[in-house]
Length: 280
Image 1 (tube, rainbow, N blue to C red):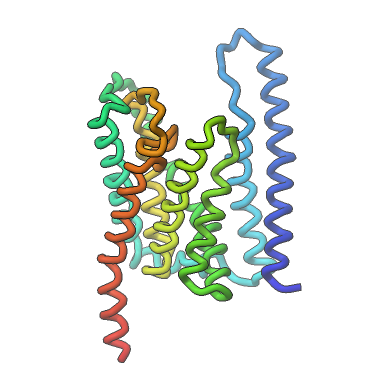
Image 2 (image 1 turned 90 degrees about the horizontal axis):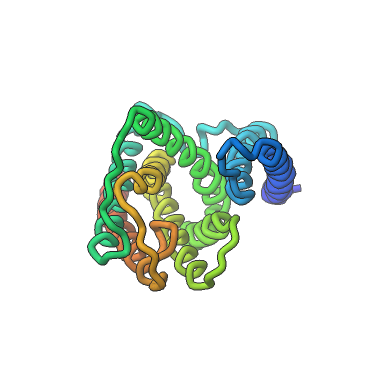
């Protein structure tokens, strides 16, 4: 059996295991909630539990799969030489924060959100630091799977362009583990998440390392986590232009994502050309 067939079976097994574990956690949560209704705690939606559980199970399983089936180290997926390449991590993080913050500013300008800074207390500062660690953990796990394994596996069979497109489609689809009532929100978020996945794929293709994509991913998620502390959303129906719940959805966000693709190409195409000239 080929590695790719083994990986397909492995991935389906991870999804099934994640579903079973999530059902168990959800039912235990609801049992505890109904037994103690006075706690005032709001139960997590099943979709959120499934998303977090899948991330943890996938990370543990991928390490096992890489060592036992592929007979290779996790570092070989694009995590070599951290001391030399760590600047890519911080450049990506700052670029992610800046790009998505501009989306927030533009939405505020057009009146679909309003500036409403919250009063900060000690607990909020602790949460801010917690979010900082959490976003890097989320980015590390997701990039290890989507760009570290999936993209690199498909490049061998499909080439870089097709592999980047297919990986981005898969990335977008796997982020819809929740009910959506408005079809336009689905379309808007799907396009936005596809562009997100495509940018992160380009980051690996240009650098051949995961550090830049991890940094960009973490920066975007950090803005999403911190946004409620500074702005309030205003309900609207123009989801194709301004998006829904996700910051990366809607035409405004797509425009900044496309500009980000242009920025990456402008930054790294010359670097690749110089490398090719030096090789000749």
